[in-house]
Length: 320
Length: 277
Image (cartoon, rainbow over all chains, first blue to last red):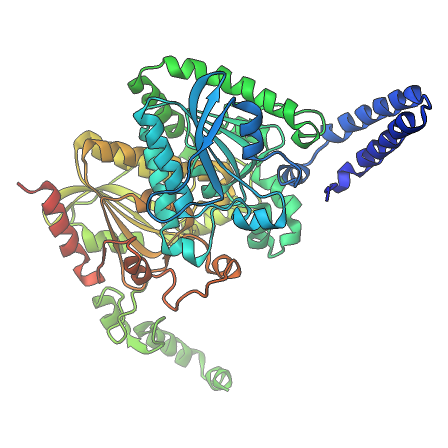
């Protein structure tokens, strides 16, 4: 079933009208091309208008859009081949994080990302993209493998949060994330991360420490979900739209704060309206950022990665 | 009933009552009424049930640092309000008033039983010990100074996690503090992490978990997700000791649970293992 967000409804109506006219042309040979062209123009104008005025909450809904391309969609569209590798060699295989060997224009790279599910069954298997300790440990194992053979690492970020359950706590979810943060800082090969949907707090960061962090135009990146923030601030999760505003969780906010290096534009109306075009833009950005990183010496690479994170934050100097 | 009885007292009597109340405290663990002087002398650990009450940063520094050896560093690094976040400025003033501190963590150098160390101690009274840019900066600076001087680091955490009011910048302090810890790790400079009540979320999932040795105080709340979230998400019923120091010990996430009165001595023995000849 297709989901249509409230602010997408006028567009969906035009989509349906255009579709009906096209069917009429195909089935009965009636030429409606003029009308179709006019409606398409209307649609484009409407899309531009709606997407020019998106609120942070609208963007949150877009980032979570059930039709939005997920990690495996991008992997299929961007890379020439992909061999998925499974398991953390300690406990199990986490469906919420996928990873493996891939070829980016014939260059081998290790690709890792959080994976959400499309239908109910897959959503359960992927735990809604909420990784458990074994997911973070699988990711780290693959990063070590990449390091051993001098291959760069690309990670796709799309998770509401790390799994908060009893099982994950029992197997050390905090330790798994913390270890990744430390080890990614020391990794001797380039890392590029792309936030493609929800950048949910520590669960996102656990595979997102990188030399370059890219973010799609309608993705979000936040320390806490707006609903949780609103519940804490105003004891009312329904005020999430206000919290989304306060948290500065949009791609351009993240870039202004220095957290993100480049905002990757999406097709008009969002990545879900044209997944292949969206993937093409991500691919171009990846190539553009990976090339200079691969020329750096290991010590330069790690030095600049350290400085990148060391300089994040805004505080003030108190005067006595 | 009791209120009525109390209200009948004269103002002078009421002052006397307050003084008497100051002389007594109620244990948060067993609810027993304790003689305040005994309670303080016992390092705020209940002499009856062993419940460890929270210490302020200053109290813990007094507990661990040799007398008159603590020299504070980076005290001038304090929180700004980079996002103009609702109510943040007020919460910062209240945090300063509640804790008597300029920021949620105090860092510096001192001797611990004669061994020079870098020591940082968080304070729950300052916005729940939460980590924003200033806390992250102070932790990173403490670790960088330790690296430069090749001094062991001891950090006592108490924190609800990353500070929501600085948004993504708070989240990035997880990476920043782990970056500094990574350098200590590579250089072989010892780092001991002490988890005190509570150590949660973004702090536990960053620098607090990557110590060479991880110590926790008895009964401390130590975990990733808030209890409510964890239980809502649950198919598996959480055990009664869920997210305590003892639970984390049982699951291999903590090296030792050390009672407060043995903390300094234990730290000294560990530091001697790392630095002694």
